[in-house]
Length: 331
Ligand code: ADP
Ligand code: TRP
Image (tube, rainbow, N blue to C red):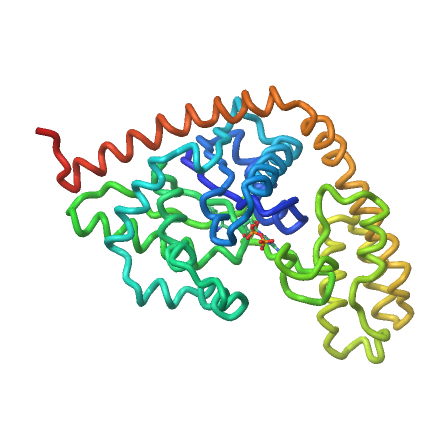
């Protein structure tokens, strides 16, 4: 039995990438591990949400966690800001994180490029806050998508550096993990390599999207003018469509369209119609549960309170021990 930690920032509805990259593993891992899954609301402050948006998005993610099958009795489900211990560990880790390594982080460089008007210190120290989230429960495994690999590498660096500095073997080295498979990257519908909510609205399908919206988005997905020579490399849009189909459609359906592609007879319109219906079949049960849960404020309140209590017990123990290792002693 491993200690497992992961979080998702509350920035709106969750999409299929979030599900296959992270949430699906959460649901499986809760059965046999000691799991802590949280809503990373401290992290989301780097984009300065309004108080109403912040609260609304936290609720959305909590509802979607539960609708996807996370069980508050099996896993500890909590909201990051309910654990001030995380903020303390973050402060302590920052003393040992070097500006150079933080500046070299790919996600930071990307933010400098995409939002040069808001390069705040929270963005620079995003990896130390994420490391604090993980090592505060002394986790071994972190279910995340492929884009988080570098952050996990930095977490290991910070954990090791702490151990070395104080000559202790206190923090384990956590690894990025996907249940049963390699790390996953779900592509976008717009021909880009990653489905991501920060991209344009036609890039992503959300678990909460209605069937009409799903059909509209899939029908608009980027393809090309058809296979000129099936032996030639495929366009990214077509690669993405086949990749998405492999997650939602039965193998014989995938084989059918693979065959029509190879013979040069594929009609992307037919393939998209099929894909849209298969995605709708997949998301409909989640969507129905979301609607019921969103109306049950008292249950959500109970879930958050139970999670905060369990998570704080674990976090407070770690921080107490860290303070002792560092040399904060009471007189
Ligand atoms: P986004 O990129 O849409 O802002 P987040 O960064 O909030 O999504 O990601 C939350 C979790 O979902 C992380 O574990 C991340 O690795 C995973 N994830 C996000 N997009 C994808 C994707 N396209 N494929 C696989 N996993 C993804
Ligand atoms: N950085 C993650 C993301 O953008 C979210 C996150 C914050 C996280 N803290 C974490 C993921 C700890 C795993 C473990 O998706």
